[in-house]
Length: 178
Image 1 (cartoon, rainbow, N blue to C red):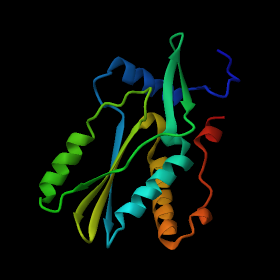
Image 2: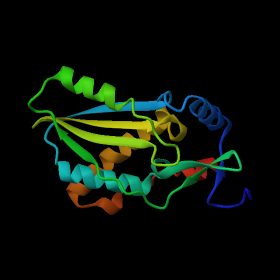
Image 3: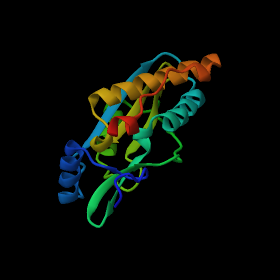
């Protein structure tokens, strides 16, 4: 493997530890980082979904996958990823049902060779939504999750205002790896 091959990047030491732990426990979602962001006030679901599609284009961490070449793990960033943000209506249920659903949903096992996130917009009522975002720890940490949340909020606001091109520069996960 040529380390200068731009398609593949070596794992950081931290990532290698996480990757090894996941390989040793492939059926356990040990490194899922599930977040639920409470959104109060009216929300345009279509605009939020468009903003999430834009987030996928701009946040290369969400397009990062892992492969093995001759038994050695590498990461690569897909040029694009197809994903339709799921919207679930929980308006006819209660908080307990929503929390139960999120607890079950955060237990999914990610295939490291495929997308490493799951995202759903939950409608609680007309004035409250929850953005559920579950990401494998191989491609995020608390700081990166905060950046993703802020960028999603900024994209959404800019789509509503019709100024999408004015969104701030997205930090590049690939540049960080280099």
